[in-house]
Amino acid sequence: MTKTELIERAAARWDGGGLKMLKTDQKTLVSDILGCILDEVEGALRDKIEVKIEGFGTLKPTFQKRRSRHNIQTGETDVHEAHYALRFRPSKRLRDALKE
Image (cartoon, rainbow, N blue to C red):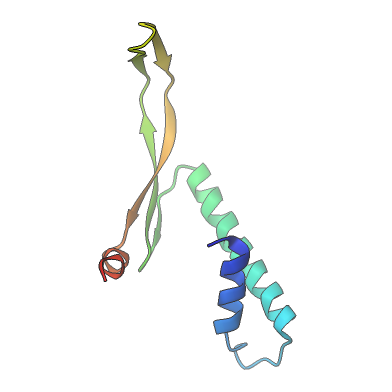
């Protein structure tokens, strides 16, 4: 599912919160809200802060230390520099939903 498809589906489900809005306005509002949420998540991860979304899962930046690698085909050894990687751990609710 793409971001655009997600916005369309969320706008279709949302009842407008009691506001009378055109469908295009609903899509715009949902798009703005989703954009703000994704910006906040990105900022937190960039600052190395774990993000927990109840019912969905946990996004956690983890430090990967520097290590050497050996290429079996060429026999060369090179260094894989230290960096942060993103780990995702789905919530129990999400894991159970995928089992159904």
